[in-house]
Length: 397
Image 1 (cartoon, rainbow, N blue to C red):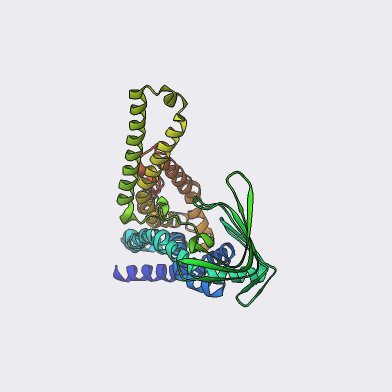
Image 2 (image 1 turned 90 degrees about the vertical axis):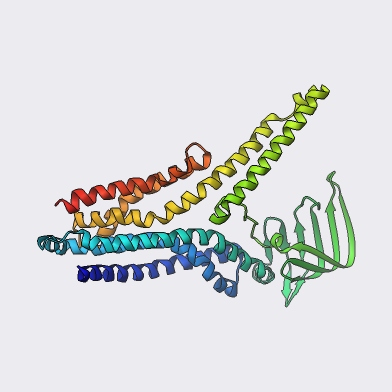
């Protein structure tokens, strides 16, 4: 028994680790190229991103490569009549299946942890790398493309000499406390202290758009302009987006949103009561009640998404076990020794059943139509299906 267990486990680990390394490497390269293209990163920043992108890649590659390993090993064993030989000796097929199930359970727990780490620590690390290198990123893009743009800024230059920007034009979008403005200069220099990015202009002309649409201009021989580093980078602060909140902080975020929603409702109720008490019916008639309903619905949608995150991450992690529950019995049943054929025979039903059910469950949970645990629907279907195949197609025959 122990010999069979060690044999199966060794075969599973060998194929799993090789496939995991290859697939993760491919996806890692893709992720780094995408970040470099989107953020304008240089080689140094790209290398620093590797540990932060790795958890993101692993949470996708572990379930797929584990299914590949299980379908390959058990398909080969069944195709070589090893499973038939085991049964002829009076040994239950469960003896060779248990190592795979235990490995899948352990990897499921690891993947649950990776799901949380990848979208919290990983995304925060990527943002930090981009922010810390924003000065080099801007200079790099200006040297190669003579332009740099993000959500709030556009920079055009005639040339770059060292740290000097020759004849730059900076166009800043409007902010809550500042109007849009355009600054052209004979030369400029950018420096960053980690939190604020300072632009030093020489012989600068500043054009500012007023609230009425009129423009005013001023000429300054020496001028310094500061903006937060986050505004100058291509990153956005999404720390409060439900998919970026760590599981341990979900309850705190839910409490904060509920408090904010209750405060908004009390304020609106107070304004309405005051209008009714003072006879200000014009206020009641002209108030945009549709907007009020949309604001409250936004609060509810935010709560629904927060409630969805813990079960969604758990169900995504335990897809490892569910894939194996289907893949291993199906590989034994189909008895195909070719590892690619065996893998696709196992993966195709999962692709057609599990992922549509997962998308359906997540959409229903995030809209508040169903309870958040609906995201486990795909896992439940795979589990029932896998147990049925195990009993009807493997243990019985």
